[in-house]
Figure 1 (cartoon, rainbow, N blue to C red):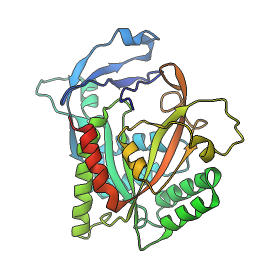
Figure 2: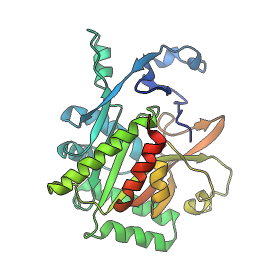
Figure 3: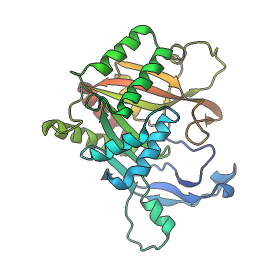
Length: 308
């Protein structure tokens, strides 16, 4: 798994490069498309950036919604309502922002960059939120994709898990800019688990989860395989690459998992026409159901893999 990802066609704005160091990350701030052609990698202004986590607040609405849209793309999910819920239950979840710098600056663009949401983590309890539009849409989305990709017994298993009110399912949402290094995921996931434990102790929303659902951005090598083959069957033999590298450890412990293609929904910046070492990649979403009692093992593996 390589943590080094770059946009193939850079949009206007902020670009983050991976740097192997303890708390600083190289970044290119902000740039314009017209100044960057295929040789953009040869001419970069580099600065050190430190990230810090904050509780989710109203000011983070646009940043969180943008990242949710990157995950769901054109799927019929009410990301506005979902963002509102995540902000309302701010005892759960964190956002990543650039650490404050002491230098004075009157540049409005710098202020916008400082307030940029680089990523966030939170959890939506689909069982508690039953009846809300976004929760029902998410369940309908993954069930419909499962029906197209999996055997009937898998569809029945997923349907049972999502609709068993005695064993709540929490959707873990961990989204960030594609080039933010995976090391930042360790403290984010650790903090989320502490918050979920405290929410359960104090009987607050989202505290009780028997299973966790993840929808991960993944990729496989594009092939000329027969398009009539069912997605789930053909992808089982293909190597999955995770945009969020740490999510492979959740995948290993999942009791149910399947992939579906989002190639027709992706644009060139958020998931289409990807390539690794000049090999074209096919964008997918990987759905996983992980037992809550297996999270501690996953956290230990994350610690071993991602500790700085």
